[in-house]
Image (cartoon, rainbow, N blue to C red):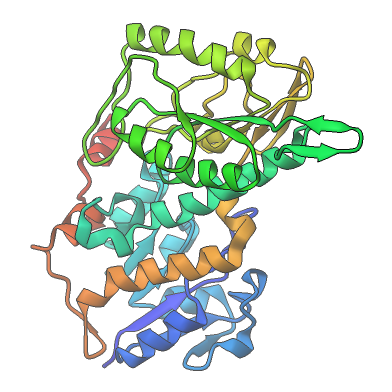
Length: 374
């Protein structure tokens, strides 16, 4: 009996991505799986039903939840949706476990094996599965377009009959995937770009994109490609240098985050008040509490003439490409466990072992387990 792999029309607010593109639906069918898709699942991402050729159609989300052996999602399932899954089903998607403890309990109680794409280890073999990176690249690109639309200046230098217009000054805080894409995009638009990251190893990456690296004398190399949390003294030293660069910028894009924790506060109210009127801060970390003290997720705040954009779910704004990339990440994750249409998970594989959130009624991810116990 072939395994049934299902996908839903996402129901979370402002989410228009889909976890299964027509390309990946065809690939899963060729692997021998039965692909079950809710009608209209890809319409908002510009994948109308007519583009899907090798799928079985479901008229409701309930049917997909009840029949799927493996369910592919973008956003975490609600508690009610989890309770509609067949016992022992496998769910693969973003889980946001640190902020969705009730949903994690529901997955545990239902005996669901849940794989969190944000927990996929950052190793060479798993690069093609790295959904955090694929979606972060889109967020970095979109954040700069938002900044350009809000700042009251041209990004590039212009020479006109009315005189020369100087290029905008852009500061990118955080040089991970989102930050590097933001740097590259701002440079393409003609801005003068500076960038800062607590990981000194990113200096050469920043410079290779044509930006100047802001050196604060603080390094925070962490494990797994992430930055560690800074001490109070380090934060104070960092802040002194950064505040001066923030004040000089026309647009600031912040991308700093620590997995499973609130985003570090890097831009204070005082720093915003030193910025010129007409400047803008685009805070990609708004959903994790924001890098700016004044950020409100999903809102545009104006303070002393400065705009602070609490950017949320930016990848969904480019839903077509975001869905393509995410669906490929999911396929590359699942393929090693698919053999002639059947599911066979190798628990000795570190990718599956480290990305597993729940299985067999147990919490497999230790930080989440401790959070629930607390």
